[in-house]
Image 1 (cartoon, rainbow over the protein chains, first blue to last red):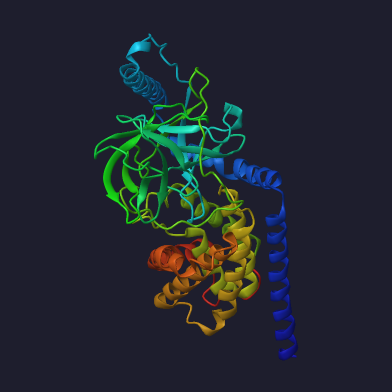
Image 2 (cartoon, each protein chain N blue to C red):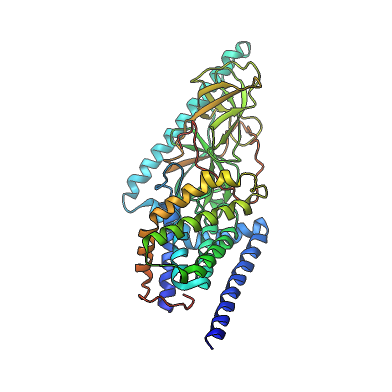
Length: 290
Length: 168
């Protein structure tokens, strides 16, 4: 009898394992839309409200709202300033075509970080704005200081996930503000943020500002990404530059989503070959502050 | 039993909330602990293989719901590792803090490496690099916190001194 009981108990355990494995595999085989729908429903029903409540804390809501509004204006002003600086540089280069440019009116929406992605393997975080606030995939995200932080990767009804620059698959087309040299900004675990595809004999130096180039995609041009912190020549003669980011990836509480400038510029997000599932990422090192 | 089940789901909910809100702030050198997985392991140690598998499934489901991608992957890996941990539970001194830390270390490493292989079809290429750079530091951090988190979970679910082998 004990042997039989043990056998039946063992069979029951294996049956439970088979059941949960089958359900898990079925979930994995759902289409992307269905996955987003199921995950979004569980997330928004069970977790998002509590996460938002936790992040907002209690009390002082009015003061917080006023503070938010002022910060919003500050970021707007900061982005205005960056846009104007970019225009000035352009005007200097093109003296003969000097014209007064209209001040870009950045279209921003403030959001609060309510949590990090639950899996330890990814660096994305969650904000309290979603499709109902007109958010959509690939919108640019900036910090309070106006530095580029990353982009929106997944949008639920009331929340969205943001992928910071210090993650894989978040390459951005940039240029060096002083010399206009174009390059691709990417992140790697070994180097942190670095510039690739720099032209041979590119002239730039430590401390040069790196800004978005605005080449055909979502990000408006001229958003400050960071400054060049180190330059090295590789054995094949190409240059590699490390970038010290303006945004602090490890201390993000509030962010701003950029809906684009009124000029209608669209920027390209390069290297955005996104896998259908997240890839575990090692801890960021290198020049990034994350 | 129903009360214990209720306590378990409440604890799991708290663990996932802590993971999303607090774990980022506890990050050390880019490494975070894994609270929901520690709950899976303590359930597996107390309830055996079936309990570990079921708990792993629900913990994975909630974690996946709070992730940007990979729905179902954490459910699968957590279930399998929960099942394995539960299968070994009878052969382990469950009350020992060292045993718990070692179980947490090995199980977290195993789960993370399973994730690497499942999420990257080319995962075997940097299998060892991921083990050294990501899985092992994360597992070590989780293992260090395991005695405290597991003790709190035990207190929260209120297991009897002689653990039952019924499913939850």
